[in-house]
Image (cartoon, rainbow, N blue to C red; front, side):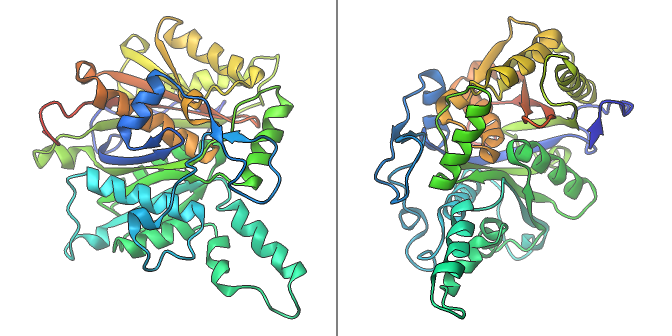
Amino acid sequence: MSTATAPATAPAKPGTGSTALAITGFGVLSGAGIGPEALAAALAAPAAPVDVSEMFEEELPRDDAHALVDFKVRDHLGRKGTSFFDRSTSLGMVACKEALADSDLEIDDDNRARIGITLGTTAGSAKSTSDYSKDTFIQDRPYLVNPLLFPNAVMNCAAGQSGIKFGLQGPNATIAGGPMAMLNVLRYTRNLINCGYADALLAGAVEEFSPQESWAVHYAQSVYGGDAAPGEGAAVFVVENADAVRAAGRTPDAEVLSVEVGVFDPPGPDGEFSRGLGLCISRALERAGVTAADITAVATAANGMTLLDEAEERAIGAIVGADVARLRVKDATGEAFSASGAFQLAALLARHRAEPARDGELSLITTRSAEGAAGAAVVRGWSRAGGDHG
């Protein structure tokens, strides 16, 4: 992981196997709905959060959220084997299914050992962990807890169940990164592919809506005066080596040209965090082999937490300027912690799908945490105006 004092590495040429990742399909479920079309529409005209007061028996800090109130996993994966999946696992698995359906990657016995999953999270399903822990205190002794609930309390449940469901025998990893999860997933995915451990990975992040998550958003927002509604969902991307995709005559939906992260002083009046995020942005541009003038849009992590939003904007403005379009993705999806970074990437791809005139444009993703973590990624996207995958 980069730090403020680490020397910048020499930039690699864009599109080389050492840096560039190709995205050949993606699936997204958010409070805006299911699929890139729903997300693109919500970005153009963000809707108000919906009523969630009847979703749970437990008390909520507020009665609205950007949640998929009517989501049922059996509607997408059938009843068999899904009865005891928690919400986090269900969302992640459906996003994986949607991503595979959206891609031209064909999985068979010859390649399934080379295809895996890297899934980002904050801490797995907070509700499942809390409910199972509660049962250990309130149920009759000695061990009268429901054993069927235990797998959901394990942080890698969503990734593991998805690997089983879709017959993927390659690397299967869960990365706990909170708001930094998606960028960390992309870095880990890049390492796995570049080191020869996998040819393709389903890379994404998931966050469920629950009373526990809702209270976490509430308290995090209250510290910095924010009022963003909680969100939920998952976005998963089929990621492959960009050189290999093009050599096979396939056209990607996007290329991730660079990802840079670092840990700095928390956002504050000294401006150190803004300088740190600015360093990540500069490194990402350099590694991608592009300049700030090439960037046409920035998908930001803005969520109404003034101190953090202003620190992020100072870094972006200092490098790419104030005139480049900003995509405030959380206005459409709410604060979804680990899934938010995945929504930022999905938002850029959904925008390309909806607007073919943007083919080949470069965009920037920025993210941050209240503790001082920061990151940036450079993405080049295309539509499918010429047909699926060219």
